[in-house]
Image 1 (tube, rainbow, N blue to C red):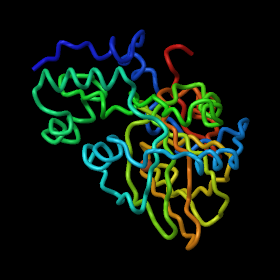
Image 2: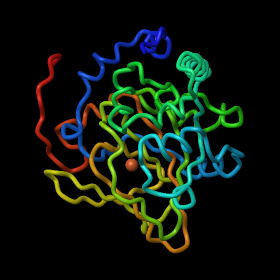
Image 3: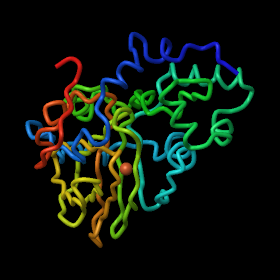
Amino acid sequence: MTSKIDFQKTLFPGRDLEKEWKSRYGTYELPPLVELTNKRVDAHALLDEYNTYKGREHSIFEDEVIGYAFGLRYCTPEEYWPMVVHLPSDEATRVQKEVDEERNISWADHQRTLSVRQRLRSVIKLNEDYDPLIDERNYTKMPKNLRGGYIEGVLDMFRANTVRARFVRLRPGEKLVDHIDYNPKYCLKAHIPMTSQSLSYMKFFHKSLGEITYRMKPGRIYVINSGVRHEAINESLIHERIHLVISLDGQQDVFSYVGTNGFAYELPRKKRSWE
Ligand SMILES: [Fe+2]
């Protein structure tokens, strides 16, 4: 069944997603992690905002998409505990309702009929299997009690579109087992650690760079290429690891690091058509 809805025009007006996909860098063209060294975030201000935010602890995205649709059952919500900063846009919710009516099946049930490969393909191709609510790029609506606060200023520090932000907590002694999220052509992930502790770290398993361990510092901004297999470990027995994680729909923030010196590595650089 082909939908009557033109998803690109409705949800991504003025954009050519296919062209963007082709022009973006792939998993092994980007470093696994880049620190945006020219930017600093006030981690205390962010933590204050987080502590007073009476936010929703779950969203459909966390429950359905992470929990089921992408098959990423790598951690239970008790261990890795998100608090949403972005809800789906009104437009995405409206379009999803239309799609559900057209198909005569709820998006969550429809998703269960698809394989992981079909799901990922639908998000890239916006084809007949597409469900707006499983696409991070449609999570752009900030709840009222966060609007006008410091976090908005933090989102403004990025050049790319900031989508689906959330606070993620990794409990003491917990590990987020190694996994791949998706191709960085789709989204990159900015991590801003909010708590100061040296006992948590992230490990990447890169096919040419080998195993790399990063300890992130609070208030710094790290952009992660989650197409490279990675894991996160909190070895502290007392402290939670709290990060603000923001998905970036665009690679503008890491352009100057591509193929040159992401963190400390030289990567092969491909010439692009516009160079
Ligand atoms: Fe991940």
